[in-house]
Image 1 (cartoon, rainbow, N blue to C red):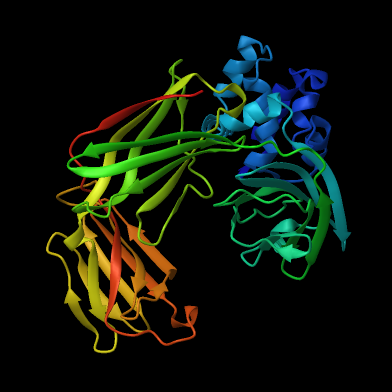
Image 2: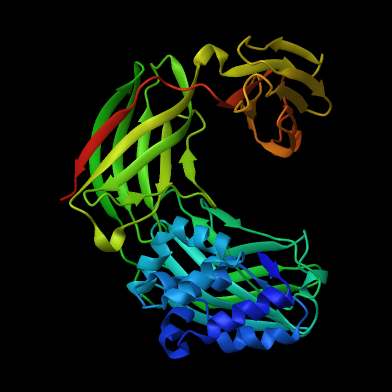
Length: 440
């Protein structure tokens, strides 16, 4: 969120005065924020605006509405708008959704002790959902919207299974009485909308909201483009299976050959663009990919061009982070506190701490871009333990990381020795590859 003082707010309202409110109305309805509502907040000492709250205004700017050059120049000079412009540049998909009226206005609310939670709008497709909500209060929200905020989404009265739900949380400045936020639901398989009844549950410090809502609009089907082509980079085989395009996102489905000599860690630069040269950017916020535990099946998320499908796309694999498989893990024994295997290529100082904690550090003096990260833990019985706590301290000279694994993730006790996978290492495959895909 962006907090700005009264001087910045005055600049903001002067700019808004130059815009036709009537012309902006249909775009502002996306999250049910209008200029009059924002102006009322001038009575408060601090105005708190999330990216969700300002998104509709920016959509107005970028969706073909004529704006005076003086207004555009003034906007570019206000620091407040810099992160907003960057945000909308990473979410071009939202512009298409608004222009094609593929969102649903809900405006269902509940008020408890003078605080009102409103589900304002929902965007839903087979890849998942975005639920926008608003909190308004005569009390200072900074006192109750703290680190113990819990958000969940129910469908038909039950917690939605087999999906990932993410929600950005930001500490609020004192004097905040109004905020807008959202939750994102990402579904590995096509989301089931046979039951259209949903409930947003939001728990604050001492309050628990339950706001039910029903989706009325039709859910349009994703478009699946079958590819099934192999590429070879540095003698490593990658199969591109399909490109699935939904209104909210596009999904590139890949698999990595188990016969490869290297473990693929990350696709740092993978680009999709159409015959017009328009790039489908990677999605950065929320869930950015799905992968199997073995790492051999991967789905990467990109922006969507659902409402203007091109005739063909080009997929370029430019920079792929990888490491030899024999160097792709460490092995330790927490019962004896011994380091059993640490590849020489991993130039880290590693310490074992109880209970089930790794502390490691590495230098950036010789390589400023150095990045090393460890991930899931697998015990001797094959049980997978996820990192449930981590701390990071990084400078230009060195990096220190501490991460812990909770034995309570499984009913059976953790069995030593254990391996911990390498998830980041700044070493790359040599070469690149390109695929041309015709879209029927």
